[in-house]
Length: 130
Image (cartoon, rainbow, N blue to C red; front, side, top):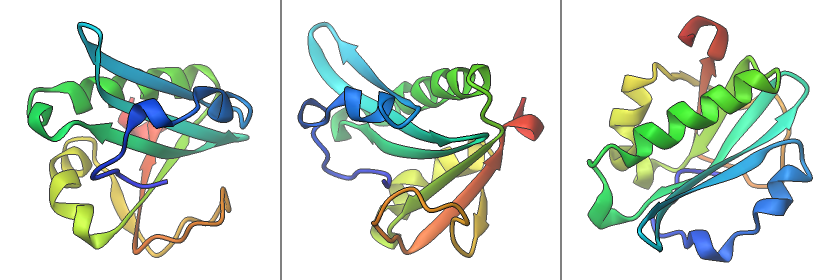
C-alpha cells in the first residue's frame, strides 16, 4: 500500500478493493494500461494504495487525473481523511503529487489497514482540500 515504482496494474485484483469498501481505477491509453490507483475505506478514513503510473508516461498528468478522480469517489462514499504510505526510495517520484495535493507528513497511519509497514506516512484532509 505504497506508491508503486514497478507495479503491474494487470496483476492486481480490483474486486479485492471493493470487498474492503474501496475501489480501483485503471488508466489506459488505447488498450494499454498505463496507470492505476486504489483505496481501501474504513468508516470516514481511506488508505490510498496501488498508485502507479508507467515510468514513460509520468509527467503527462495521468497521476493527477487519477488522484482527482479517486478523491471525488472517496468524498461521495463519505471519506474525509486519506492516508498514504511509501518508502524513501519512492519519495522522489511522489514528491510533486504530495506537494500539489497538500499531503502532510505524519509519524504513522493511526488506522491499521493491512500488515505492511512503510517508512513514511502522509495525511490529507479531503474536507480542507475540497
